[in-house]
Length: 203
Image (cartoon, rainbow, N blue to C red; front, side):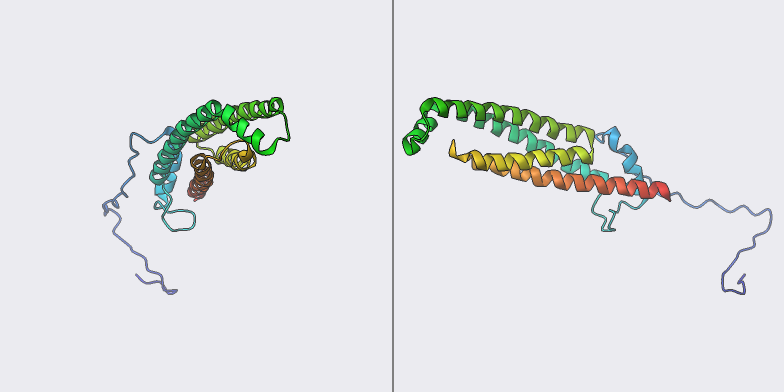
């Protein structure tokens, strides 16, 4: 039946039973998906798996893949940083002799004091750096990724400022820069997933 305003209505007999509409296919969470993302998974696929800007580029599967890549980058960087610290320790005497021969402004005792201060600051920084990085992978919190990005950015600046004590390791610098950019990207993905979840819950 067509109503006067243009809408249409259907008037079936009282005892007519209509078949139920087919259910939409539900997304089955893979076994590897972490429980912390299970709530975001249903919300994301309830909205069609689209991102906050409607481009369909953000989904829990994409996030998990990038999360594994980020953890792999951190593991590789940890190996490189350990190798860098070992080379820094074993080449300390030669580096200090080169600095003393080139400038001759400070005595050797002062140069050794500066080296040990830098060395222990480097060890302390690496502990904070990797603890926050792996915590961000486990906890799935945008705030922790933001903290890691700030720590990585500070490490990039310090790596440049202390270049007069030793030759700058370009591989370490590249890893820290890449981790900083990747952490900001992961933080953006998490914020979009949480936004999709909140929009799905408000519908």
